[in-house]
Each structure stands twice: as C-alpha cells, then as structure tokens.
Image (cartoon, rainbow, N blue to C red; front, side, top):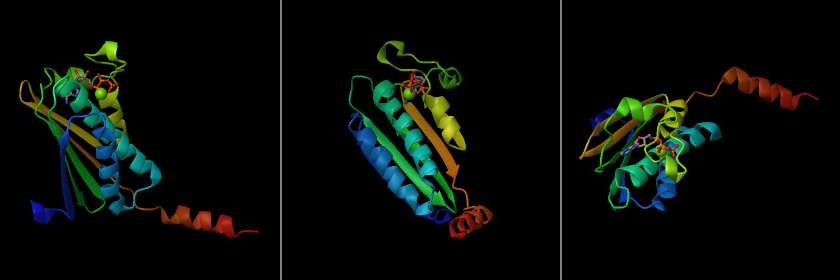
Length: 159
Ligand SMILES: Nc1ncnc2c1ncn2[C@@H]1O[C@H](COP(=O)(O)OP(=O)(O)OP(=O)(O)O)[C@@H](O)[C@H]1O
Ligand SMILES: [Mg+2]
C-alpha cells in the first residue's frame, strides 16, 4: 500500500475546537505539494474543517476524544481520511441530506456533508453506532490549463 502513494502523513489530536484550525492548516500545507490553485486549496481546507468539526461536536459531544487525520498524495490526487471513535451515525444517508442536523439548537445548519461533497470529488462515510465514523475524501488537482496561461500571457504583454 505504502509504495502505491507518493507521500503520506498522519495526525492525531484531542477533540478540542482549537485543533480545527491546526488540522485544516496542516492538511493544506501537505496538499500544497500538488501545486493547487488558491481556490482548490480553500476547497480542501473547508472540507477538512467540516469533517473535523463534526468529530468534535457530534462524535464526542461533551467528552474529549482523539481525532485522526491522514492523507496521501498520488499523482495529482489527494486522499484524506478523518476518523473518530465517537458515537457514530445511525443513518448515514439521512445525515448526508442537506439541512439535516441533530443539533438544530446549536447554530448548526446541517450543511457539512453537502459542503464536503461539493468541494471534493468524492466523499465516503463509514460509521458504526457506538464505535465511530470515518470520512474518506479525495480531490484531483487540475493541471494548469496551458492554453489559458498563454492567453493570459498575451494579454499581459499586449500594449
Ligand atoms: N463524526 C460524526 N459522528 C457522529 N455524528 C455525526 C458525525 N458527523 C456528522 N454526524 C451527524 O450527521 C449530521 C449531519 O452532519 P452535517 O455536518 O451535514 O451537519 P451539522 O454538523 O449538523 O451542521 P453544520 O455542519 O452545517 O454545522 C449531524 O447533525 C450529526 O447528527
Ligand atoms: Mg457539520
């Protein structure tokens, strides 16, 4: 498995909300090896932030637990896994529905999974009630569009 990827990293941290930025920024720094655009990097940061926030808020609720984040680079693709050993999700299909939230009173809008799915190429959720949840996401960074770059260059050099 290890030989199949170009690079890999793993993080483990306590489910404190102050670690959400740590996870998002660390994954972004790792992903930057693929030369993403600012927009692609922002998409990855947002998706990681949503998944990590879910572990902190829903999986462990008022308890403290461990959140694990790992990522692999392969070619121009990044795969990210975010997992917890928290309470798990009873109905994953329902949880993924836009606006579905089990915490409507806590300023939750129920859009986390929808945001992950719109910003990443694929999002998979595995969850067992009482054992925990694992989110696997992937995104392929686009090759710079050469034709477009040339056009931009012409535009810049034109009088
Ligand atoms: N790691 C997790 N562990 C347990 N339950 C989860 C986990 N992630 C999501 N859920 C459940 O899935 C629901 C939907 O998650 P989603 O991120 O889409 O919305 P939300 O977190 O409720 O609101 P928002 O993300 O918009 O603040 C949550 O309300 C929660 O019940
Ligand atoms: Mg959420």
